Length: 466
Image (cartoon, rainbow, N blue to C red; front, side):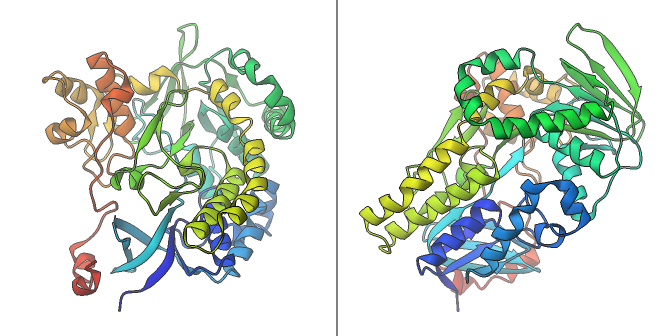
């Protein structure tokens, strides 16, 4: 018999755990579905196992803070289903998922999407070579198994995450060959309009300055104003080539290159559900349109955490709590007056936590080179299509992303456009000389994750009918 719940929460990161705790506090039945083997999401990955170990100490207090929330989540009474992939959500709401090769459909009155964020795809020549990873991937290896590269690593990119990872790597005994800082010049000048926010958020700024101090004290070579990067090698990474702000090009031996150009909300599920989205001009990405309770344009579908807009772990927790209050009110567990009273301090806390966000967006805008890679750059890793392939297809009439998908298969691979969607949209916008927001994004079709015929056949079709 098909299982039914008041709420299904998809994702067990900071927002998903916080939402589940709040929902259970209002007496609602909750199923939390998570792709990972344990709660924590990306930012607190493996926190239950790692927090009290030496690795937890080197990862910092911000990481260890997730252990307390994970304990509260375990004690909340929510049903937790790890290592489960959701591959379709249909009105009703029916959530289709697979765990250990077995497919299942469950029904819920409401859905909370706590999908978090993903690293912004930033293709450059050679980024598919073995030895080239994202900073986020390297940090996962550090968190889950304390893997430290044997050889000095090169770090290329901008934003807070490279600073944090480099500090953590140095504490773990790793070595950094160099930091290719791609942050556009004049960041602090762009931040001046938010000087008041910087003063209020000085504790967070102090953390960033402390990471910078650790990196500088270790003697890490920093190359500012890098505008272009190329990974070189025969079958594996052997060299890194970079161009500085003055147009000078240099090469250096490299065995590991880690890249990062910011994070963007994970929107694939909200796009698949045809929720309304708006274009964030500062960060060149889409985010779902939400009401004051985190509800999308589709009634009964809520978004919590960085999937609603980048804010970090603490803000994600508060957003999860606010969504729980909104869902409880919609379910009749709270009166409008009680919901407003409960939400008021949460809204104040969230505003405080997000105060620095506009300043960070101004300091670390995505550099133009991310969106206009050279013709020989692979932009769709799944189908091995280059930027040149896309530009040639763009010359056929005035196609949109979905026509490009039909012409070239870009976006049809296992990642379903997560790694190429924004790049394709920007290339089309440049070729057609129109705003990227007007070009749009891929239409997302099920299944949202790879699904075998055996898994599909295991689904009880009769029970899965609405």
